[in-house]
Length: 390
Image (cartoon, rainbow, N blue to C red):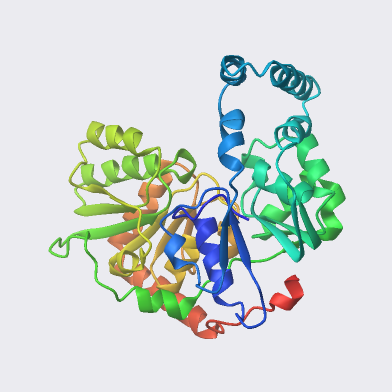
């Protein structure tokens, strides 16, 4: 179960997982809160797709202010509902326990009566998905798959202490993210395990050779690429400021940013403020960012926090010199100074390391050669032991 198939890291990792599951051995149903997204057409044809029809009714109650829910219910003369809603909302606030609120919200949501061998809340932590799998699905084994740094997410401790008690296994996408989880919820230590995101190396290299429509091939300067949803946590504002510093120093460099999100308008204002409209290029979302990465001189990741960061693994696969900020998972993917550089999460440190690489071609070549050697040692497109997961 995931929220949708929008173009993003969690969705991409799900597609990679499905790509290595033998279709003749598994009967997979993918439940979406909303049947939409740029990756929807990439779901294998043997996977059944279902939509949670109940979600459209409860989503407004979760997202909008409680006053709006009360007002809407009053117009519909749902007076008993108003009373129950107010009680559950106030109790959850008073006891700081969102479980009380979700229990009320999902009370009338029908349970899934089919018996599954395994039910996976794949987008953890996501309150509504974790709650639904924990309480509304019947399965011999339940898994919550945690893709984010819990220390950077405002999760309700009492809600998740209750929810995690109902899961048989918790998979986390990096060692550091697991350490954070166990620090927050020591009781889950014995049922938590690391499960790294799958990177289909051969497929990525194949896709990287496809045509590029939006990257200026006639541009002769340095090309930097960043992939990620446009959001504050992905740190594209840091990239804009670092680029301004580089161009002020006289470097002929252009930064291509692949991704879409609600942060676009804010970024556009920042780009205009630094007079970078022709140099910081927002290319929008792409189901295949690999040709852009392959054509770049450097791959830059400016995230403030991540769980693992698939795009970083993909840049490694395409053997690009990398500069990344120091988020959870970065140290597990990059050997600092050997396969890339890890810097602090601010524009000056990002700028200085990019400047170093632009000034030192030999260092760029060295990083690329080190990545080539590492890729040779990998068992490409390795079939994962899904049986161990189940």
